[in-house]
Length: 352
Image (cartoon, rainbow, N blue to C red; front, side):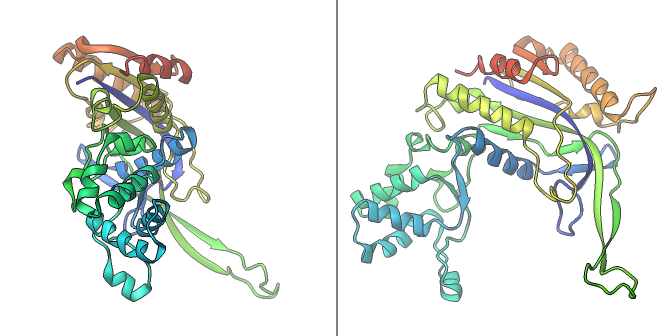
């Protein structure tokens, strides 16, 4: 299968990009030492949000609140308003189990699990339900890549629907958890805040507290199955030029998006310092994270980023000489050797 690989090195200053259940930056053990970590789910969310701004085809929404949009779509199809809500509940129940308990307790209309969908898909489901009068038949009739034209993100990131496997879609994109290339210990920031209305004669802070943070150079890896993206279950309904536009937006968003945790208080916004892009004609994506299995240390006047880049290039050369990975390469190029525009143009030329 032809695929695209993105190997990204990116340094962040004081940050808490992705929090765990204790409000601390996420970590993982790799190479026997603790690393800073950002989950793939966290970074994908940021990429989806940014892609929506770049390309109108990224309109997918993951939500439990599909009942009222389905009701509105059924009314638009000509269903009487007095019947539309009950029919919408029936269709939502077939899609992702209508949450009766939540409705009884709060009056809110939800399904039990998040459903990744788009407005065009909900309208298609309502249309099919109006035609068939049966929720299961409607889902079967509406399950088509044609209706994903406004939801390239579903084709890229996939969805799992436990209630009806015919709606499950394997994503064409693959993401690894981002890991720091070096050992990281989370640090604690003690803060105090002034009470602006506190009388001058009183001393002391209005409040105090602590926050955890770290700083790290991350190795990020993402890949895209270009052949899968063009099959009938994904974006075959688009033209080649339209798929190239989707992939161009995907790459740009993947490089620029940053998880939003504590973005106002720590503002860790940076851009990647180095991006290696590779398009292979066959095989499967191979990440270069083992370059950092031995944690990187700054040396010889080099900082962590520069030392990480040396290690990543060495790892790639070793894999190519040992395994011949470069024999299937159709394209390889790097930022900043190429500008972003040149990189996107050359990588997307291989999207069929």
